[in-house]
Length: 178
Ligand SMILES: *[C@@H]1O[C@H](CO)[C@@H](O)[C@H](O)[C@H]1NC(C)=O
Image 1 (cartoon, rainbow, N blue to C red):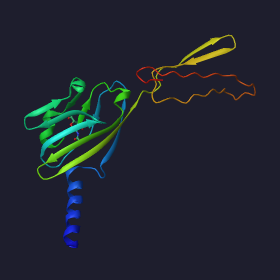
Image 2: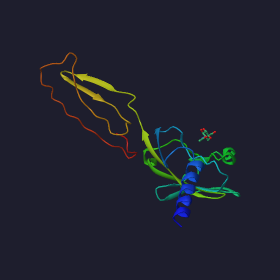
Image 3: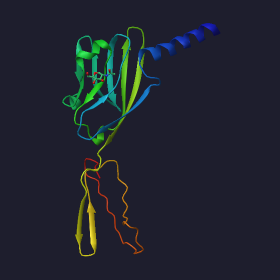
Image 4: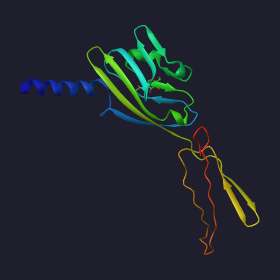
């Protein structure tokens, strides 16, 4: 019995590594705000059913009859239909937003197994444009549309002994940008 159990576990483990390329079941992906983003999921076995979920909501399901997208994702998410027969069931997210961040699940039923594959998405909006404005002895520096929250410090070159008085304010927009 022991031997059979162990053989079974080895088989399950082997199947796991075999079916989805990459060791471990979690991948991290970082995408730039408003750009297109690919969440990878690749099976080496023929896929019978696949589903992508984000947190609790379903994005798309695919089987031999084709794919069906949830209403809220319809215009923004898609599978690479021509790649599915090759086991590439990666998800394309168009114009990625900060609220798209989080954990995604790619679950697949293949001819002999069931797998779940996690992809953790983080979104970045890098600092692109800094405005500096001088008014007498007050200098104002500002930027917008940044994510995640930036660290802000003032310094002078060369370093100065004069105490700089500074006030930093940070706002977050409805789209979660700083
Ligand atoms: C899946 O297909 C897309 C589109 O052709 C490609 O960009 C992506 O790299 C492929 N993913 C894998 C894991 O092969």
